Image 1 (cartoon, rainbow over the protein chains, first blue to last red):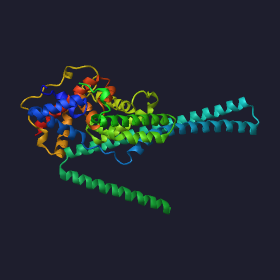
Image 2 (cartoon, chains in turn red, yellow):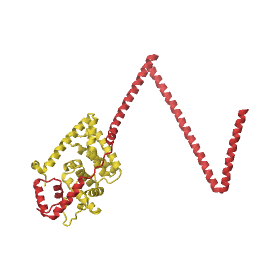
Image 3 (spheres, rainbow over the protein chains, first blue to last red):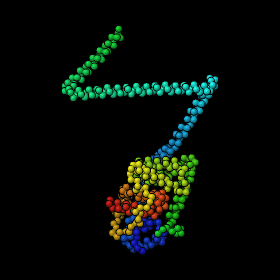
Length: 192
Length: 213
């Protein structure tokens, strides 16, 4: 037999050959040092490869996967049930009102429609106004804050450190006096 | 040089015969579990998970090289498998179908990340599928230089350097212990091509081990 090819070595090691081919190879490697060495070398590689450590599954992994799969389905089912109950309740309430008030069904439906529409329109208007007011308020506050910051920035560049300290002290004193005066005025008002 | 079927009763091949018998019953069990899952039996899918999560994580882990990512991918593959379970055809092995989903998932991820997915997404014959080469006369012994534990560590490191299309086949063959037929079914490649690529992957690993020594 000729020297082995690499594919023959692997097929031999993996037990993929017939007994006849196997015996023939065993006979050859017992007399050929080169092929014997090549087989031993690859045998170690295959053995080590087949016993590589496993990647451990963390605890609770299976339950997480199951929850991911089945929660989605339960959520969808819950949605359908909730929507059905809501719709049935609305229809039932409609008929109860009809029976109690004795109103014509068509009139009742039109009235209900008008009420819902007007409620919706009012809510939309109020919401719109509230959003606009809040956004204007935020803009004004932001402008004032930016002006104050700019003012302080220019003061620090124009005035010397001593003057800046003096100005800050004066501002604090002025504010304190203002607050004190306001308090006195308020107390005087109370006494009167 | 192919395995002759009329000699399978002889003791030499007893191990492989027993293995194939075991695989047959395992395949039947998978089909039964899929059937029960489709009928709404959640426990049946839990059994599928318990049976296949470890080999799947071993494969995905070696392909992406990051534990957290590998766990996320394994979870996503199982979710995808569950949602497309009605498309599974029982004439195929469940685990080949599952690993095909996993392989496509990894290819899609690499495509989205603009990583070269060409090297793993190959179904055609390539130039490097040539028959394996001769044994050189002055071949050094690399594996014998290391203790078994050390060798395993070196192989793990060298696996990262292996091109993805070869790494995938190596992992399936030697870590997941798939047959060449199963790998050929997953990748829709001829068995001969699969064998050649697995041999190539091992020879490349030897080269990388030589560089590490």
